[in-house]
Image 1: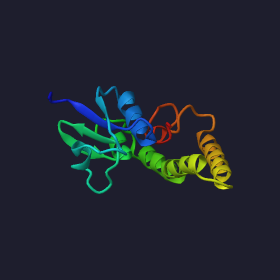
Image 2: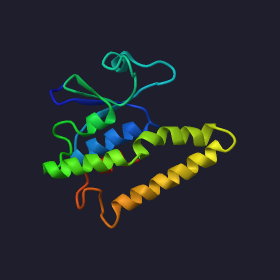
Image 3: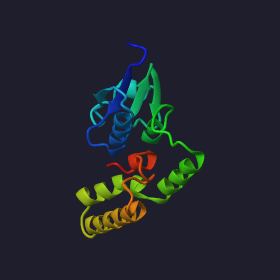
Image 4: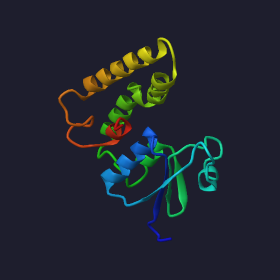
Length: 156
């Protein structure tokens, strides 16, 4: 294994894995993606560094694991803001937008619930998209002219 080897434990339908992939692509980091079987048997590689949550993504760089997509997206060398004030502003905006926290539940309710729940989930999803659009305004990216942390958080 080379010194700069990067491995991403992945699941094709995970928006959190997609977030990590976007961050790696934006920074130009070459990596190997390894699909995890989340329903039939998680690998020891996933369980050992992540025994409580047992979730993807997990990024290994030089054999050291990083868990959680936000941690992976903001690790040293990946998409840092150039100024402390901008960093704080982006963190504030990312905390105010609920898409990241609500998306998995909304998707689940849309696909698997019965009665009014799927329609309510669709309405909430549309409201969140309107909120995102309002935050973005006329800018190309949340940070202005440059793609950054908040854009990654909402890239799926």
